[in-house]
Length: 121
Length: 108
Image 1 (cartoon, one colour):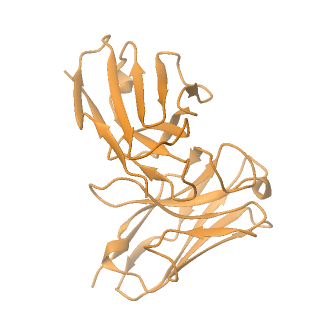
Image 2 (cartoon, chains in turn purple, brown):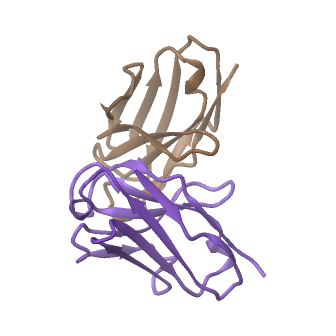
């Protein structure tokens, strides 16, 4: 199970930290990702992290502003979002790969319901 | 970036009939393609991965085919619960995972 939280309304330039609480699997063994879905737009990959947290990846649109991390002791995935822009407004989902600990060529078998981020003045 | 294009945008089919959804990649993605179903207010649900392998618990009326740049999802006999939005996603060019714009499957 994946359960996101932390979304809300924030002014442009502001910050938010999203959380994704996980259960039902060995968290440290699975690569995790964040995706977002803006109204009327297709799903967009945001960021990924390997099971050991050694490797992190970001979409160009968020690189330098967002930071993905994970806490093995809490079985929780995070997305720190800084310098937010109006175009970051979306429903943010966390998802886990079907396979193992490495970010790679894998589909996403499990998704959370999402948490809504609205960036507006 | 690999661009995924789905067709048609909307497909109207009667219950019990067959639905055929298409997905095209802007360059070869081998068989690194997944199909997802999404209903309003819900998260995406993985149906098919590796272009043709059904995910756990997915009924066998769902089937996927294709490789390279052309892919198809067929739902052989539509049930009421199948009317939803369907996305294809490539994971060949990881981690730059990209999705199609979706096909809305509606009741005729």
